[in-house]
Amino acid sequence: MDNVYSAREPGRAEIDSLEGPAVVEFGATWCGYCRVAQPLIASAFSGFPLVRHIKIEDGKARRLGRSFGVKLWPTLIFLNHGKEVTRLVRPTDAGAINSALGSITGPCNAP
Image 1 (cartoon, rainbow, N blue to C red):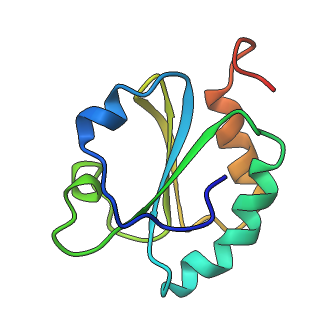
Image 2: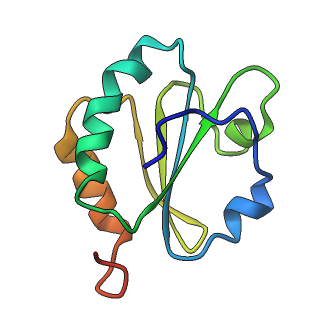
């Protein structure tokens, strides 16, 4: 699990070409909702060490977040082989994150 929002914004093609399960998290370090969600996200990810976690600093004029239609933070996009399976916006419990992680990890990708 990544702990820092990256200022480097990958292109949409890079995200779409990811192999296996991955989560792209959009947010900002100063966002109160993002800070509250971090322990929940960390707890859920502890059971899924093989899932790639990409934290992207989002904001005005940031193309990747707009390409996913992100409007609120944090938004977690759950992908399998570059395709969106589900998303969570402002998650409030680790169980929902756990369930979403389970939706992108099949028998081949399970830890």
